[in-house]
Amino acid sequence: LLTQAVEIRQKLAQTDEELDAVAHALGGGYVRPAVGGDLIRDGAGVLPTGRNIHALDPFRVPSAAAAARGAQIAQKVLEAQRAAAADGAWPETVAVTLWGLNEIKTRGESVAVVLELVGA
Image (cartoon, rainbow, N blue to C red):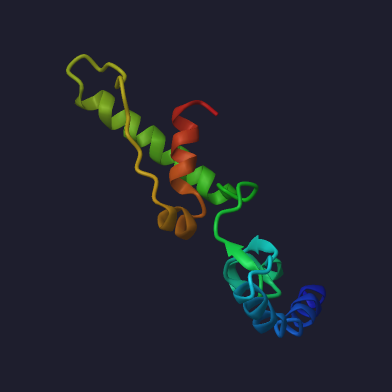
């Protein structure tokens, strides 16, 4: 825990790069991309600020918790569809809505539903 605190403190000290990055971008310069996020939820990897952030990192989506929730959701959807079918048949199609904001908030739960439905 102390090691994490020291890392966060060091990275917070680099936040003066934010204004430099804005000025550089306004001048047509390249601003290095990095994963954005919440310091408390996502940890020190979101620091320092002053980078061209993106919210979805394909290496972190879905999270382990989102994958577990997504698998449960997919199984419940399939069970409900089979129960509703007169002959108990598997559904021929299933639709899943993917919204960026929901993926950010749930850390990829809908992506996990799709992965479960295709057997990945």
